[in-house]
Length: 457
Image (cartoon, rainbow, N blue to C red; front, side, top):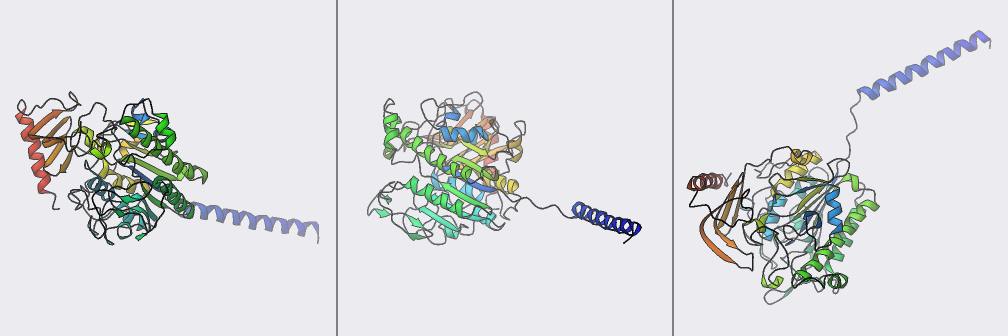
């Protein structure tokens, strides 16, 4: 081969190489961009946790380092409301994005086998995400039905472990309320036994196993821990740690720190698997602390707020709440906009890029609020109904009707008629302004009437 032939061949090869590179470049520019993997979602729902019972919320007598760390890596809300002041309707509101009455759960579901609860036709977060390719799991407390069609596997969950009723002893896993006492521990709808094992430890084991098995595809985990709901059964080390606190705060505090430690283990599993920045973690209490006899008539705290569990005063419905997604959402920030439990479903849908259910929703996406402290609340008005009591909040005004005050102990004292407060001036709800401001009472009553008329839609 001559030198001229060699040069000609080299030039030809170079032209082919350049043409190939150009083709690849054009293909890369014109081809559709690869869709990023959808984030995992974990909803941590605590049980009977007081409004201010969190170090990040200002509690100085409690140790909650793991939840405080979650707040530092996320956004914490100061005016976040439960959908109801008791367990079942609050959970129904969170899981469906619909007011508990609209979701068919106006009060607590039965805690005995064979009894239905939330109608099977309601669309849950699990069903919404499952339709988008997620694997779904419930771990912990259910309390939304005790029949096959209303237990977790009938409501969109691929896997379930926990108790179906309102509460259990954490070591025997029996429901001790009125006889005959029943064992309440199920995996995928079948009764299982683990006598002597602390329930929160079992929860972490089951949840960690689920995460491990599904680490390579999007998953949704509903981690509904049954603490600090009575019976108060904190770890010995925490009982000893809080001996300086008065009874029953010492018992409640020990159980709360026991809970915080288990939540820390769950989040540590995400870190160990390198999933933390691929996972949205949402935290909320289902309602305020309990002042029932079984809860030693208290232990939790609503801070400056009046009321507790079962009450529509602030202490019964204003709850701690956090959302965290490191690298994608703001960190170590606080939001004071009004929000509530029904908002999580549409918020998750927007963050994950999935379609909303076709049913009418009461919740609104909190994404604008999460991203900016200056975004307006998605709600001009919020409504609550529990038994004969109801409440409506519009701006700073809140009107309650036949409200029950459980501040000191449940079942509490009923205050008949209208009770009007301005939360900006009177956050503790001490002064009834109904007689002084009949114009505001009339306006909020009209809002209530309009809301009731729309419930059938």
